[in-house]
Length: 274
Image 1 (spheres, rainbow, N blue to C red):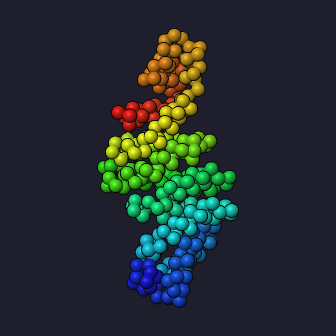
Image 2: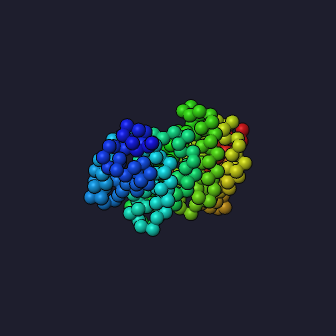
Image 3: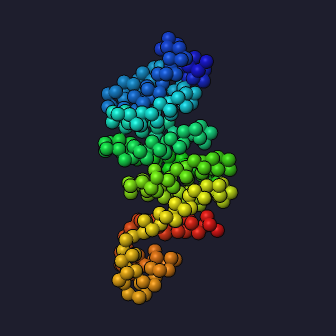
């Protein structure tokens, strides 16, 4: 049974044997979170208990991955800020090196709760959530890369991540940073996944991307189009030259990451529609 000495659960012969497999399984998710508590004293104390309790911590985490993930996802929405912060930090650590078969049952909720915490009222929670979202971004793009992952994994990840990020929690969010992450993952993921894997989700994703383009372009484009010189107006009305118009006609070398993002999305849309 998981938790016995030398078993996949990784339990030791002392405390773990006294607790038994069922109690150990219930304790591990909470203990794992407390090992990432914002308080250094709590973190150190719980880490010492974790090390004493388990002969093979990695094996124990693998054996109880689903239980730990479910518990931490619930804790991301907890009332206490320190619980939310510890849960985000714990999930960031938990996801390291995981493959799609393990992540598939949790990927949608991971993104939902990660983006939710990224807009938390507590700054330290937002910081921990930022690390979690960056980890999710890297993992998602790795899985959606046809050069690095099996076709079935790419298709499965695309079917979960792309529609979610194209929806109200991603591109439709009122938080600029969240919209930026969503657009980045959408553009990069679609480019690397391959047409066969992306095709099933295009009906849900492309209309949202098209609608998002107008909102992501710099507002000065409309100004130039309304009151600019004839050459500038013509450039603005030419979709292929809109990005160039922002940089050249307005003399704004640092123009907006939003302008670059809109340009990238235009390029991506041409690719997927082709």
